[in-house]
Image 1: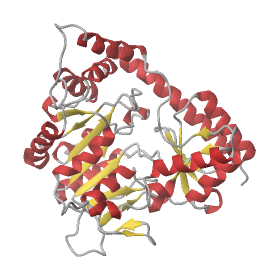
Image 2: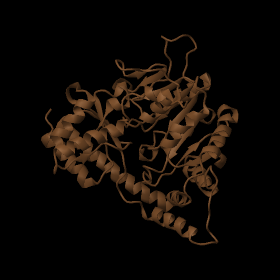
Image 3: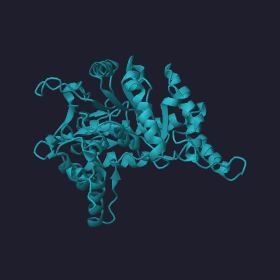
Image 4: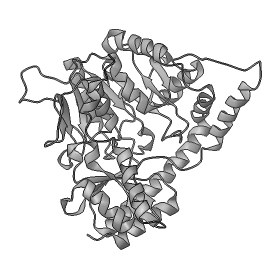
Length: 412
């Protein structure tokens, strides 16, 4: 008799973003004609830059000519793109990355979910709290956690690293004195700039994690999908700027937010040969060649275009546009007297709910009063309660209307 994976039954409630969509649709159905302003899901809205469009067109044209047509490519990614990522992305930080350590994929979310498959189920997993849900949910579905404690809002056997105002929304290294001696985190998920809080890890803080991982023989899974939004050079844009990180860290990256590829789909992971004595690189290569046929040939041409000097210049203009939106949101919240964080080196603003209101209660309140969709912080973990995430992705005119509606209509 066929059996299901019962670990899926452990997943708490519905996935965060579909639940937002469900509630928003219900409100729209009950209030036809009302304009809804979306500051919730972080989806890009602006057109792809000209250089990338030219690259994508080139990819299509190649498929129309017998001399340049290509079918299956390398599962690990086009050799030219892997080399460009190593030299043009990491090379600008003075880093030496072997193209054979770069694996091109169809997005950072997929890699963040799939990377845990190369590790044993008995590994103790640590996550930032609040955290992007995919880190938690995929490990739950794989069987690395116990059941969900509804009262505490946590999974048994999962190590939560609180990111709260007292530690500037940056986690401390995982060490729990209440656990038996020797209980350490084996896999550590970090995201900087952080989704959802918008906080960026300092070099000193990240160095502590690298030192911890090397000492504990742990592996850091570092999500740097929003790194291009960091404008302050004092913050590291890649974990490999920290000495020793290539011995203990896997980095996941994406073209989604930096180049507008949310619907185009292209990302990569770097798995250094020095992590776990080369075993991680070998296993990820095995996993990639077994489960994946490679990213789209057409899309990879767009990725190559994004990494040119002109492509990077054009992409940075779009990033500046979104960060201008973030400034509009922050100024509006200031005018309303609402406390908030982030939004300076990241596209997300972490807003504290007035009067310590529950996140989902405030979601309903701001939707009903200001017709604005936000993302409840509680959906990212227990430390997210009492906050909501606002996204700067959107057309500027809509961002302004949303902020004006909050300032003029939200009752606090």
